[in-house]
Image 1 (cartoon, chains in turn green, purple):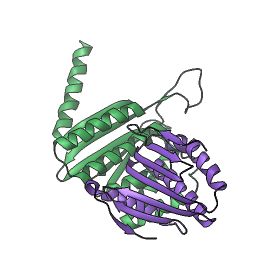
Image 2 (cartoon, rainbow over the protein chains, first blue to last red):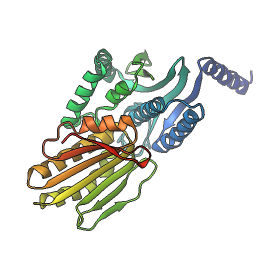
Image 3 (cartoon, rainbow over the protein chains, first blue to last red):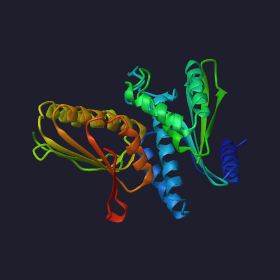
Length: 191
Length: 135
């Protein structure tokens, strides 16, 4: 059997599935800051063209930025040169991003590989955020800024809080088993 | 001290620090991945300057169009630095220009802890400023 035909069928099936779910942006692969700049612009342009209201467009863009930077910092699917054992130096991180329409607004989704032990901590953090209203999120956001960034954080430790603040339709998340040590983490934010 | 002038880019802000005029401004976009790294040197120089400043009248202007969460940590730290300078014998006015309510809210949130510096939110819709003063 011709393998290349299978590939096209598979990609076409994905493409149709995405269209059915009104997902107009889908990316799976290595994620860099340059990618964020160019795709970010394309998304801004697209939202301008469909005349999304300014607040919604800003929320989609801001959530997208936080999600991309989260992948760049934390994805455990990393390509690095064999001579370099430092995960942070000159490596490429793999992740997944999508943006789709929903009835009133957009769904901004991201996914990346995480370690099992990190999944647990991440899940607790996100569940706590889900229970909070905007005022409570702002409060904890400020408290977090007042303290030095958490030791395992390469950003400001407030990325998910920022997403939670801007996602006025809330957010949800899920972990899918990958192997003994890893899970795939998905987060969906609704504007 | 030599002035600092850095041109704005797509994801990093324009920096205009004129030490001799006591006039400082950060404007534009700020969503680089390594925000702490981008601002490190600039803030070091500002720290050095403020450590030696006494009885000065300092104006610091923010005119951000968007910033990510790691930049908000930097800006929060910067506001704290300015507040301490205001608490040690300087007259510090911070102006937070915004043309978008989200950025206005952000300014309000980040300036909440200020005790000594004056902080003014200035809406700049179509170039016609109207301001509310909370100092």
